[in-house]
Image (cartoon, rainbow, N blue to C red):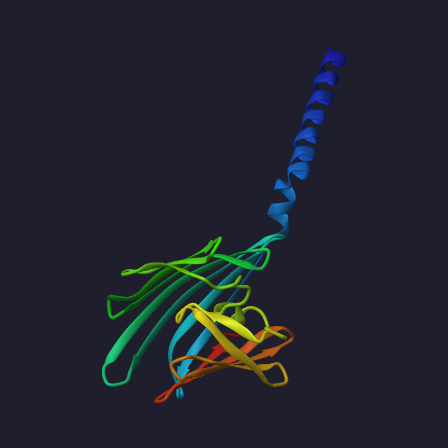
Length: 212
């Protein structure tokens, strides 16, 4: 009986070791433990008034990464408005494979668009249209600037305008993005992290500051 019990115990230990070995061999164990998740929230200021927030969750693995954004802004220009945003960007080996952008202003959908990697560029679709954008591989878009310093990038992709826009280094770890509508955004970094964003238009200046 003792010999049988010892054999059962040995077999059980062998089975456990085989399962662990298979996890390592297939990458399941390593994949789960290699993912890194970071979260940051930027408070949004119009002048001195806090008008909303932008929350970013960045999940990184060995080959894939995902950026999820949730935002809410309540402000008044001529009239009061509430803007809600939800965005997801998925990368594989630093190539944008899929993005989904949804924005609503005063309970009305203002933007709902999707980008999917395509052999001829990217397949773009929104509420009213569908087309292929014949553009090169997107490795850096506007949202990625919130989680990674661009360093030597000369242009980045604007999801809002579905085109490349120039980015210029204007100071020590400071970059300016000029948009087609005449507005610009200035991103500042310290130790690789974004420490502030200033968005300037014809009639407004908005600051985004990380929540401490």
